[in-house]
Length: 74
Image 1 (cartoon, rainbow, N blue to C red):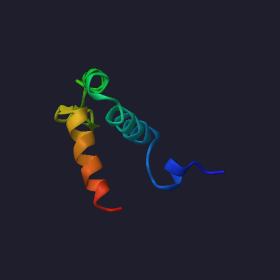
Image 2: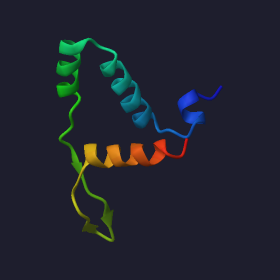
Image 3: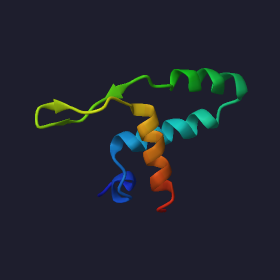
Image 4: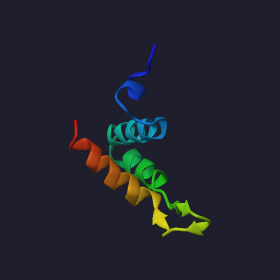
């Protein structure tokens, strides 16, 4: 049996990010603000090609842009 997130073409990490965002948005005001602060990411990554490091990118910004791009395809 295939998982719904897998059948819809999502990665597990993207699925977790979406569900976490939904849960945070369903909270009342004060707990929601605290949860949103905990959910902020300060992770960076870089792609390596031919033994050369590419540009460092903020993971949260790349995820947001990618999610917005995929939201239009649904």
